[in-house]
Length: 276
Image 1 (cartoon, one colour):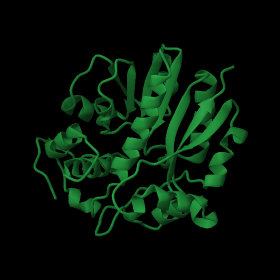
Image 2 (cartoon, helix red, strand yellow; image 1 turned 180 degrees about the vertical axis):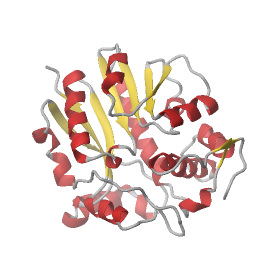
Image 3 (cartoon, one colour; image 1 turned 30 degrees about the vertical axis):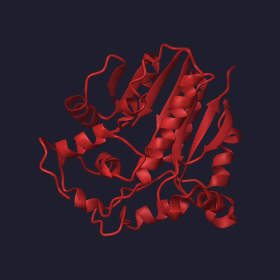
Image 4 (spheres, rainbow, N blue to C red; image 1 turned 135 degrees about the vertical axis):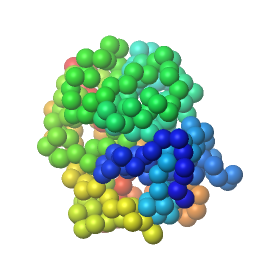
């Protein structure tokens, strides 16, 4: 449904507009009485931003499950590190910091100026959060990390970037932050092809997905440490389970093991950087 909130979101177009799509899906999932996903701030943002959300078509629990998977990765990293910074690249309207219980660790939120302005206008100010209004590809934010460890998230980001930029960024991150890691999601080449053909994000949607330049198969993802210097480890993360057959862990595990479907799917991975 369209909302009549206090902030006009229609200025966001193209890739930035997808932040409203994912926000809508998380907010609606959070509001469900039968959901195990809780994101009160997403619900608040959804009500506060005026936008014709119906253009995104039918809501899905997919973005809530993705958020839970990223949350789990951050939580695990913080549990095993005494001096860590979280860097959220292209954070959009994510509210991970609050879902994690407002951890007392440095948190860099890196995004384009228009998105940072929206975040600062609608989200609570926090001592630990530092907003950086720049492209994720602008290496100037590297100098703002002052801890000995780092976990970098790129939730719903890298597949919007050209392949050469993604590979260069991964290499620079691994070189600059030894012992750190990056968590990101991967789309298959088939979805990238569909995006170039005018694919919509969901049934009954009128919004057209922006082009998705970077897409790789699961087999190619596993070989990333062979392709990029100083990438030491690769781990595919288990997606948070949800309601229904399609989100049952047994079904997703079966798909993962199926040769063709297992290679052409959306999933979340973590790359660890070499320590020296």
